[in-house]
Length: 292
Image (cartoon, rainbow, N blue to C red; front, side, top):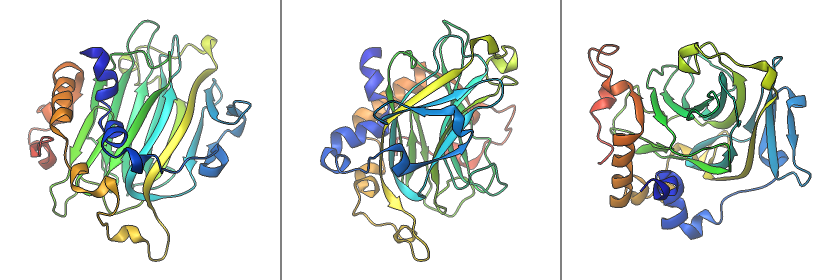
């Protein structure tokens, strides 16, 4: 069961790979320079000789990050990552979408962060959803495989009905609300940085700088989304001409529901919708079912 889940649980990637193979084959690819800009510390960014593999490094001085040159409102976004191996306690590799470069007070964000570990301990994924600057929608999952030994595909499916990121489904209710980000275009980002004040065992495990530099690597970026173009972007009014905005992308299939149920039973460490001490009255989105 676990070996099959390695591919099945990444639901967004599965949808594109199996249900819409012809459309996914037409997604945009290219060199790093075609798609991305370095956000900071360009000297901590390198590529393979052919330019197809990209490396971000973290040392005691600084980390590094990149972002897409274009903004998108809805679509399917995919990249292969290989995370920092060995002792990576305190190190966070982030892969996310956001309306801006920075933690602005009104930003929307689809966030997932890979939390480093001491050698031999499993990586954790923390996900969060922000709308108009408000997050506090964290979930944490264990990984059942070693993301440092090979490249794994991590995808985001975003439409007006649901957000599907690795091992999480976040639904909309079809009404104006303050929890589902669906109005603003976003860039896609990735970065590596030191967060040893909280990332590993709540900050008890600190980054061992003798192990630096810490390096994460990337390849095979793909996007099939609605590119935002001012002043009259098509993305203002969504249509069903794209596979990621058609009915079958609004819901999980029966097989995907089984996979997601397995994740909920076996991999969830923390779910804000179960935290009644933190939220005596649970947020309204917690009543929405991922099965609908």
